[in-house]
Image (cartoon, rainbow, N blue to C red; front, side):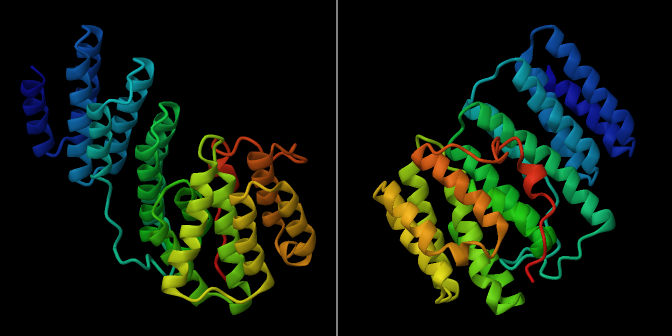
Length: 312
């Protein structure tokens, strides 16, 4: 039954009446949903979103995608293979960056219409990530974070490095993360390279959950290893601190962790953001109490990091 409805609406899209088609998708979805025909109602939104995105109507496609994720939440849809497939199918339709190289949009000048396009697409990506997080998506959620990081990096490059880093830090694509950092390091001041890397390492650790501490320590080391493949790590006290800190966390040694904070205080004090991240790392790994308002990291993602600063 859904196929017949979709064919009818597609004819409207082919005629160029995208707004009318949008209303039809919504109406048919609600009709099926009210009748308890949930799979058909989901299919209508999925296919509608994909078609609108394919024809360049980003806002229409995103709205239908958001409706599908909202329906999943209201219907308490679990993390099924089909549910994930529908979301992935929609996200595959998001616009490709103008330059899909590993170095992203290096000039960082994606503004105006293109900047709005990125923000619009991020609405759908963020909603998908939040739904996956609530479902305990694990590996799938990490893939979504990597997808979001690559999308923003491809469109806006270093100008949104903070947001790119926040997503990569919660993903698992350490090669992609390291490549983005190395690109920014080549563009920035040499004296700041170790700060880029240290922030990234601490972000990976700070986003850890209590059931994945060992995994995140290993991930932080993987990030350093991948960076070393692209560009030699700076020989600075801050980099030595990061390498020793990974060892301290790997040994679950709060004493060694505190010793490192004291020994490398001058280096860690170069950037206030490092102090915030260190407090979160200490809280997550050793149960230390926070002394500021740095809690709620997932909920505060956009507030904390969306306004990423340039690399220089």
